[in-house]
Image 1 (cartoon, rainbow, N blue to C red):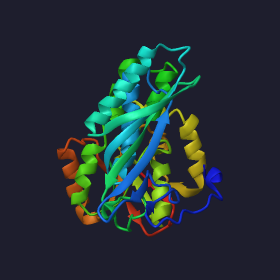
Image 2: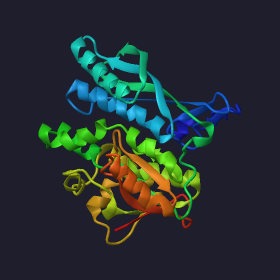
Image 3: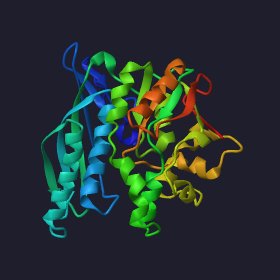
Image 4: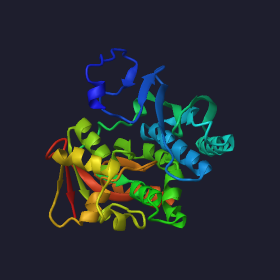
Length: 323
């Protein structure tokens, strides 16, 4: 993607507050001194058989980008690629209902969408939100001394892939599905009360991929404590068998930027590269407020939230993984 974007002219519009130059989760455009638009789009192929649940997961995943920027989702458009000659329209109906359920939960109005004939099923949302221009979270504000909090468990990619390969039963998906369909709304609503300096959501590039973007944008180093990172049931067992697909790509791409210390459990190290769908928020918060923020997250129902690392001035743009 960096190669594809290389050479594109820089945008000089002074109202564009966040563009694509620092790999943030969404674009932000100022409308006035008190309002800015947050805009994002995300869609993908099914990762689960049930169409309603797939729609809900895809919608939650797209809405997450707005929450990561500190915004409130306002409107959304469905984006669909559908093989109409192969699948019954009732399947699409269930996908759309699943997506609508998550948009409604977010207080976001679905205003339409666009469907194309496609041999491979795809679904997602283009979401527009609102944020105050002075209250935008980006991945560029992490400060040395900050503590890192992750709000969801890792392992959705490993579990979904194992299910597709018939290595897991549908019952084994329950915890992962609950995580992927959970909005990051509750976590996002808590953050303004604390000294939060940077936020990103964890999706396809895995925890370390999105953390690397934060480290580079902030010109800081990040340290993760592998044993403190929350993991979905079965994910560590699966991670012990090695990585494939997108997770392996993440591992290879990030190798120059990630140092894994001696004594780190190899399965836990692998888990940090796992490509997530509708993952949690990675939050850099002032050390003095980290414990209070973690407690507030737990009290609001974000039970998986955990303190997973810290920001350092050493090794800018790089990551160290410790036991």
